[in-house]
Amino acid sequence: MRRILSAITLLPLVFGTVYFLPAVATLVLAEVAVFFAAIEYVGLVERIGVRLPKAVVVASVMAVCASVGQPGSATEVTLIAAMVVVGAQAVALGRSTPQVLNQVAISCFALIYIGLTVGTLVSVRGQYGREALLVLLLTIMVSDIVQYYGGRLLGRRPLAPVISPKKTIEGAVSGLIAGVFVTLLLGNIWLPLWSTLTLVLLGITVVALGVIGDLFESLIKRSVGVKDSSGLIPGHGGILDRLDSLLFAAPGYYVFLYQLS
Image (cartoon, rainbow, N blue to C red; front, top):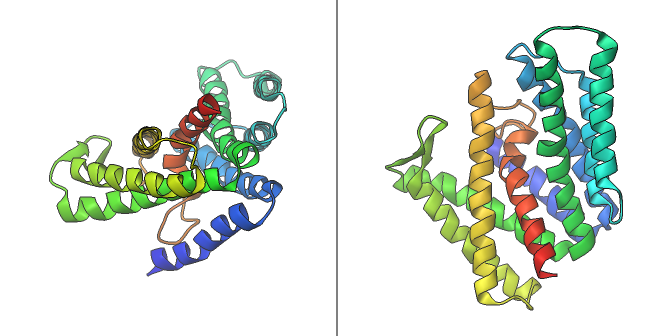
């Protein structure tokens, strides 16, 4: 019941923001998500004994997200600046221990894994329009739902037994079919210039990357010994648990759009 109530609350907020409000509202919503996702990321890492400078990491990730989301901004400069800040912070602490490299590397990875990827969602909204972003969001949402219930009803063979024992090949295939169908359906309405073959390839790419993103986040959680990234969203876990598929699918989708434009 909590899962359903959370979905009823969050879905109108997300889709209403993307469809009815200007592009800057999508950036604001993305920054809120990035803020909590970065905090969850730091919390996960601390479970394996690596303490990160939380304020530096969160601020840097949010800066990268904002930079990617703004057309014409120098994203590479922001990334470099964030990396320098992380490195300078490590130098300022003056601790010569084996943990230093772990701290810096894990901090910098957050810039790409969270900031850069969520920023591409904002960039899609700003450069290609609300409809293009909704195609991605609805494809991933429907695919994830069908994967979950398709796996429960039809699942027999595990997809990645070591990483996520409950995910099945049957569920993934069900989600792939559903995702491609949604991409075709919405693409014919909102992206009429694209051919059927292009939309099919797009749907396959998005869903496949979404599955990899889901498994990657599961791998992170399993490596630190937790089930959810946090308990922020009742019945759904944390922000990272909701974004996991998009963190890999969004950059691939953006590249697809860029190549076709």
